[in-house]
Length: 403
Image 1: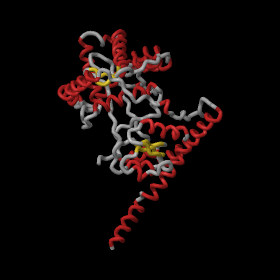
Image 2 (image 1 turned 90 degrees about the vertical axis):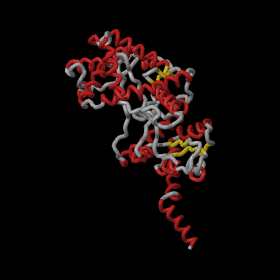
Image 3 (image 1 turned 120 degrees about the vertical axis):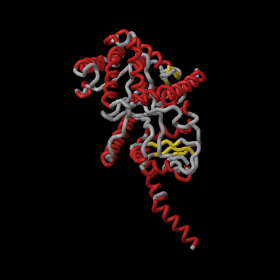
Image 4 (image 1 turned 45 degrees about the horizontal axis):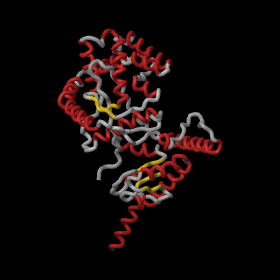
C-alpha cells in the first residue's frame, strides 16, 4: 500500500518566451511549530466562528466579527467540472512540451544553474522589475490605484537605486512585489477562465490566460522599457527570461509516474484559478507534497477531514485525522466502517457519491460547534480503540489464548 500520509500536488508555472515578462511564483509554507499557541488560537477562532454562525442564523446578519472569515459553504466552492473541448489537441501539445522540455530546455537550464547564485538572483530581480509597468497599467484597469502606485514606486526605486533592477531595494523598503496581469483584470470584471488550453512551450493555461498573456506582451511592447522589447535584443532577453523562470520551477513532466498526470494538472490548474476568482485563496490551500513530520501539524489545523477514497486497504489516515480531533466525513472504503462510528465519530458516505458527500459536509461546515464535538468524540474513540496500549493489550490477549 502506498504511503498515505503524503499529499501530492503539482506545481505549475508558465515559461515565457520571445520577450514576454516573467510571472511571479509564490510558495506558501507552514509557520513554525508552535502547538500550544496554535491550539489556543484554534479554540479562539472556533468560538468566534460559532458565534458568527449563530448570529447569522438567529439575526440574519450578513457579516461576521472582525478578523473571522465567513464560513465556507457549499455555494462558495468552485465547480468540479473542467471544460476541455480541445482535449485531443491539448494532449498532443502536452506531449510535445514534455519532449521539448526533456530534450532541449532542461539541458540549457542545467547549464544556467551552474552560474553563481548572486548572478541568477540579479537576473530574476531584473525581469521582476520589468514586469512592474504592466502591473501598473492593469491595476489602473482594475480600479486599484493604490496598488498601481506601489508597483510604480517599486519600478522607480529598483530601476535607479537598484541599478536597473538587478537589486530588489524596494522589498527592503517594505514595498513588496504583487504582480498582476490582464488575465486578473478580466477576472475582476467577471470573465470566467473559460476552456482549458495547453499552449506550445508555455504549458497549462486557459482561454482567459491566453488572452491575458497576449495583452500583457502588447502592453510591454508598447511601453518598451529601455528599448528591450523590440529588435534582436528582445529575443535574447526573452530566452534568458524563460531559462531563468524554468530554473526556479521544480515541475518535471511525467515525474509523478501517474497515468492520469494530464487530468491531474488540468484539474489543479483550473481549480486554482477558480479559487482565486472566488477570493478563497487564503482559506483553501493546495499544500503540495508534505514531509511526514509536517503532516501532524496539518491535521491539527483541520476542522473537518474529508476522506473520499474509493479503495482503501486499512485506513491509517482516518485514524490520524481522528487522533488530531478532526470531524470526519469518509467513504465506505476499506476499514472505514470499522474505524468510524457513523453519525457519532464521523459520517460515512457511499464511494463516489458526490451528492452524498456534499450532504454530509454541509451541516458540519454550517455548524462549527457540532464539528468540534464530533472531533472530540473521534479522538476519544481512537485513544480507546486504536492506541498503542490498546493494540498491545489485544496482542497480549492473543498470546494468552495460545498459551
